Length: 344
Image 1: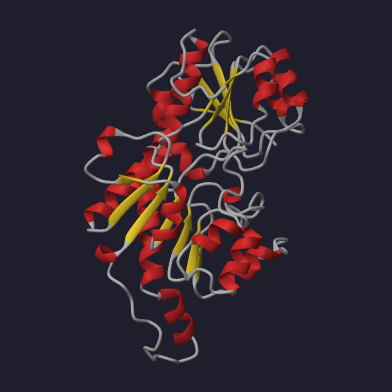
Image 2: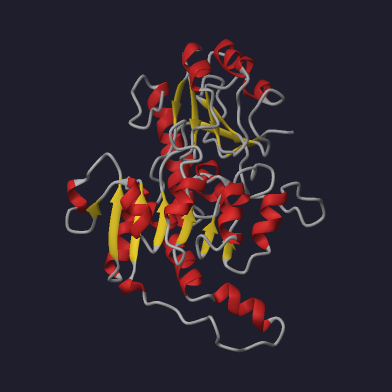
């Protein structure tokens, strides 16, 4: 994969050089603008970072990546160290793809972008919830067969609902404010209680949230404690009229358990912006190739399920912030400073 050398103010041999992996066309304007304001060379490619592409980083001072594919191989981190690179910067929030132990052992500072635009994800969640509670997917499925009947499409009004948020960090807090502004009762399960949310939410334990919410939306990071946090037991605790939203990370929800709960009418429906096994599917045009994810195919066929291809983040403001924050972090680290977004 050729590296595109671009946007440098000059090409002096001693200029700081950053390599960005998996750059999309929509990111280029923001990269252009950042380079114009900084005396740093930024080169790009369109491949994922990993064992087969790590050698592209040789000769660079910094590396920025964004991808869903995991990078477990210790060799990758050893090579970055051998190249003299001191950091590995993600221009996304989820850092579970990185082998943090290997990165730390090789002296690499790992950073992410924890809040590129909390509003972007929260607005998608609102859109998903509105489609679910107004039964728009089910109505569209009927309309495709010229069935315009109303039976089963009566909807609640959002101000009469209780919205339960699991994890009220920056994104979860934005979700809370949007639903509270619409008149919903908002409850939160999170060990960290934010004083600024005192007039917006009530804090409850997870069991209470699951059993009392009309909408359950998860906004936690993915780690050992949150993998399959929403499992068969959690789904059984939810109301049969409740909806589940996952715009966080796919493995937080046990997909097979969710499918069973939907088939058994344990819950009323779900909206998923992320799913287990999405790497290599979401973000790609797979219209001409077989998609090897049977769970995804099953969920797509359900009229009470909304699927979107991990686009919660995907707004103009968010794209710019992901570029600016990640490149600012690289610059800070290379200049001997400490990023506020270090995760290891």
